Image (cartoon, rainbow, N blue to C red; front, side, top):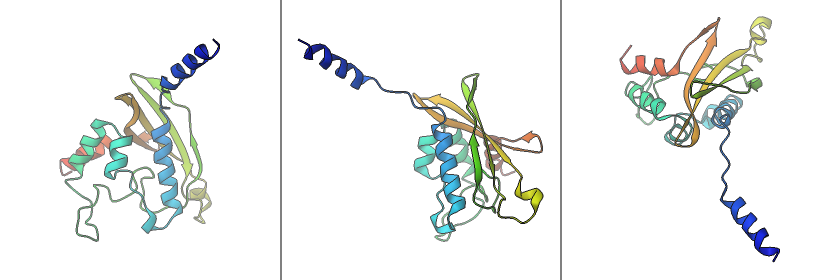
Length: 176
């Protein structure tokens, strides 16, 4: 008799799925970015390759990227167009050091999105003391799409001003 309730409990528990953490795509993008800056160019992984783009980014972001990709910033070694950016979008740079002190602040939910503030030091290998201790900030907007959290926009913050990667891609698509 005891096995029936126990079996039912296990059966019910096995059908319950746990919702993904809204921070998951942000953590993954930051892990890839951190690994990129810790490795050499041959190990570089692009967060906008087809698989991660489709899995971690919203349909709106993907559409803006597809439009912007029609205007690549460079040609690759195999004569294929590169991406529309000539730099790492997260760090907003072509150069840098291995990232240090990465902090992903708990998300703030409002208006159907959760915003995550990420800070890190990207110039710790530079001898300039002022630059070495500079903390970079990037904000990620995460939405729920199809029952999973995806990044809808990325905002780099510098000198108190915030930009939008979506808006940048829209400008690139217009040829600006």
